[in-house]
Amino acid sequence: MPSHRTLGTTDEQMTASKPSDLDQATLDIAAKVIKNGGIDRELALPEKGLSAAQVSQALAALSEIPNTKWSNGRVSGAVYHGGEDMAKIWVEAFSRFEVSNPLHADCFPGVRKMESEIVSMALTLFNSPLPSSAIDQTGGAGCTTSGGTESILMACKTYRDRARVEKGIKEPEMIIPLSAHAAFDKAGEFFGIKVHHVPVDEETRQVDVAQVAALINENTIFLVGSAPNFPDGAIDDIPALSELALKYDLGLHVDCCLGSFLVPFVEKAGYPMLPFDFRVPGVTSISCDTHKYGFAPKGSSIIMYRSKHLRSFMFSVMPTWPGGVYATTGVAGSRPGAIIAGAWASMQYMGIDGYLESCREIVGAAKAIVKGIKSDFPELYVLGNPLVSVVAFASKTISIADVGAAMAARGWHLNTLQHPVAIHIACTRLTVPAVDEFLGDLRFAVDSASPIKVEDDDQVALYGLGGSSEMKNELVTKMSKRYLDVLYS
Image (cartoon, rainbow, N blue to C red; front, side, top):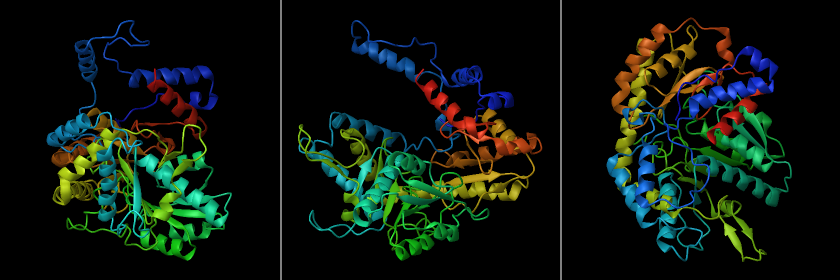
């Protein structure tokens, strides 16, 4: 889970890049990440299988390895807990559909029904009309995926394939805000799509639409906007991007993975909101994570399209395989039907009223933090105009690294940002009762911080780890891969 940690490398190590330096840095990371709780590692199958009681005992021991106390509301994002009653519903859903696999729809009709309904409920929530039948080509369409990254990957693959078939584009390009999720860059790497990054306005944190327009060329296949983005929670000017998409016949993807089941309810909850969904005419696809503010189990997201025709370019079909015709919606073949059942059950349990109340509380907590920072912390400034759950703050006078370290020492697991160096908290239901504690601890952290240092600008934040390191750019990739190696140690 995200926390403030320093990767423990010196300037000399950064410059030299010697194997011994990398090895020492890797050992430093391992010392902080690997926590086995004194339990022996199992490196090979047991000669004789364990009894059910022995397995249960081993699982209990693993669950008791000291970990982040996420239930106290001091973790930014990461754990989107829907409550103990929701957890019980998950357990029932898992137990009833534990062996199900939507790849075999004929074997598991209940899972097929739930998956289609998850997509339909989401399309309705994001204001898309639905097809009237299986052969109706009008109305929206979509698929479930394993998470926001896969939803974004599949959207990018969809636009690439459509451009190849309908426009003959062989060297595709996409234009995204600098603040867009890193999954778009991953998609560019995976699918051979050139990625143009457009700066955001320093005040609004929205993408510079004029610069987006200037980058459009004959190889552009789609544009991207966030609602909101991960770093600072800003919502891009989707109507302005829509005008460009319509003018140049381009796709427009809106990433609502983080906003998920908050953004459709913000306005209904009485808070200001910007246009972002299928009511904006140029929007052609939306990604939405059910496993965030939809409170579904992890491994659940949705990719939505304006039409079945557009969705068809996401599909993969192998008609000549000796094993039979192999047709899949996304990256995976077999998928866990139990996760689909858990997502469907979560959505049914929450309903409109539950999500509306959740939005009112979570967005209200974020606004209370914004108000507190603006009124009581002259040393800090809030990035942009947060409308949903993310509040990012920085400083022009004190070291944000010191603030983050002091908050970590008090048990807070916040996200460190870069460009600019900042900290954010993504509020969840667990944050709601902890707002006053957050502001109180932030006062202590700010008061104990040293004056800002030039080297603060060189810090690199590692997504998923939460901390930062004074690493030079040429070594970031090497050290990040070493970190990923450590996870399997």
